[in-house]
Amino acid sequence: MTITPEVLRLAQTLWDYHHLLHSLQKSDCIFVLGSHDKRVATRGAELYLAGWAPLIVFSGGLGNLTKEIWTETEADQFAAIARNMGVPDQAILVENKSTNTGENILFTQELLKQRGLDPASFIVVQKPYMERRSYATFKKHWPEKSLLVTSPQISFQDYPTEEIPLERVINVMVGDLQRIRIYPEKGFQIPQEIPDTVWQAFEQLVALGFNKHLAK
Image (tube, rainbow, N blue to C red; front, side, top):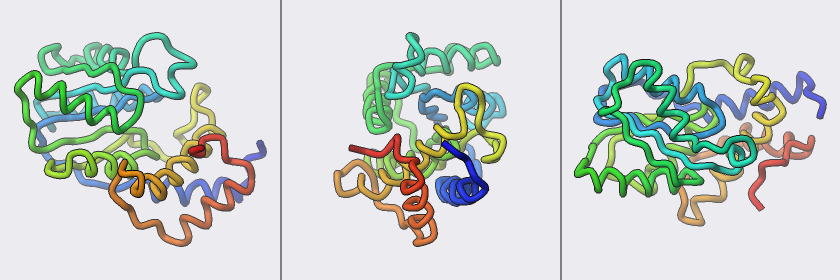
């Protein structure tokens, strides 16, 4: 698929919308959502090591993208990255059965309950273009908790890699925006306002063929 300057401009509009630009605050728990992007694990570990929270949870089994490329779960790989960076074992919890964002939250709720833990505030760590959707999902399933969302501090231009090519990033951003629109009525997320300019960018990208990650 051809990535023209126009495609890049439209994609940047979606990228900016997906970012929440929350300011970090000391919290009870860092909640790292699994994915195919190991930089999310690095970001979570950096936050722990910088003292933003005393506990870090890695959540994720094998999802739509990772079941095709990995055999070891997202959460186990992410936790190993954190340990290698110096996060102590006793500060780490691993939930490695979930396959989507809703399950990330529900299964982590159960894990914390089993351990007798009830954090009041969370720093959720996710891919840059999934900040907003993670926020909307978390607030639906755990409305009473205090929450901020962050991600690896990378620009749209610098984000793609060999494993995560630009075309895939754009397809996933398009699919996630569609889910932000349709998932509230399914009970999966709280509603988020989508400005007309953002929705127009979405429609143009779909028309250009970036439709590989749309919900069925």
